[in-house]
Length: 182
Image (tube, rainbow, N blue to C red; front, side, top):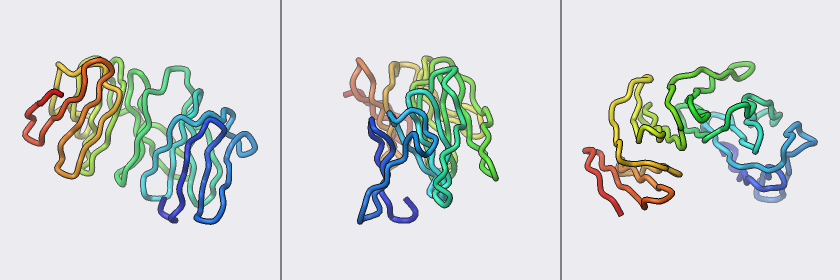
């Protein structure tokens, strides 16, 4: 993180290693489910922590987790980069608005969201039942309809999008939107 610490998601809580010792965040810190599925940060002092049942928001300064999203609908993914934090339910992508508390702002509705990837240029890749789309300001700009059952998205330093699928291998989507299948 911004303070040089490592955050590690485990089935027994969220672990923070500062180079000398570990601290465990769990029930004693207000995280009601210690099975941590994922962590995302915005490089500006904030984390999202995804458990099986909730998503928590935490300032690295205060280190007090607060619930921000309950799983009345399933959480498909959380993500963060220097442009912000995002939470994707199965049908909506939310941006996390930070202030004294964190609030959610719905920005994209799409059926069956499975993965999200914010890029360094204020774009967000969204994989759903409709394919893989690139959004800027809530408007889709690119669609790869043939890519289904996406489990993970990754953008390399050449701005090439790599798309992992459950049953159909790996796809490479170049900056020029040329698609290759492996």
